[in-house]
Length: 229
Image 1 (cartoon, helix red, strand yellow):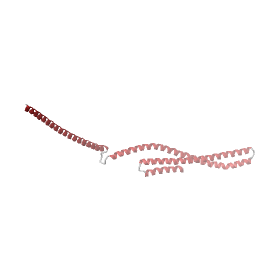
Image 2 (tube, rainbow, N blue to C red):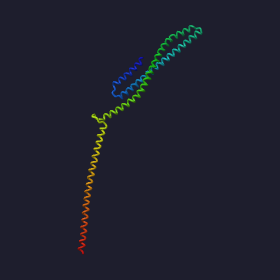
Image 3 (tube, one colour):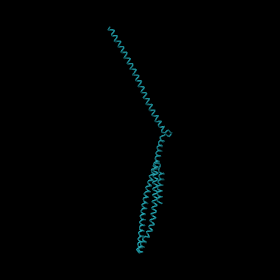
Image 4 (cartoon, rainbow, N blue to C red):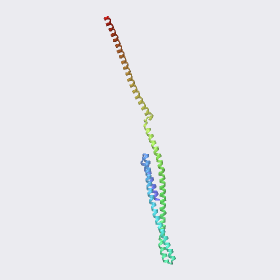
């Protein structure tokens, strides 16, 4: 049937075009699903069209059959009334309708076959799309995981290493900065201690000087007292 082969050609060409043009797998999957949904839209439209044709032919066929039954009934009543002339007229008018009925029946059978085929295509395509949607989710998850792993792989240097090597380098820098900070703090602490020792020494010298002056002053007082005596 022409319509079925046409849709097969459409879907086949869409898939082939996508496979040839797309380099991004995720984009290719999305485009493929979009193409299938577009095909489904065309199938639905064509199904509606052949269904409308089937209904039109069915109405014409039913009308033709009803007209034949009516003329047949009139002919029988004319015969019963003894009017063979009228009966012949009804039968003559019915004759071409019999041929028309045959043609309409053939058209209706073809339209019904088209409708059945289009519904079968539509049902199959809808089922495939539902299954492919589930598979698309799975594929996208795998692609996301693959991209994440690729980024992790790219972190490593061409000569090896990877994340561990990067963290080793950062750890080494942190340890070096820590050691430098501790060393500076230690040096400053040592300088402070030296100053404290120096202050203590001067303080001792000052205390010693003060004690000496006091003793001298006491001796001078005693000397003055002696002279007064």
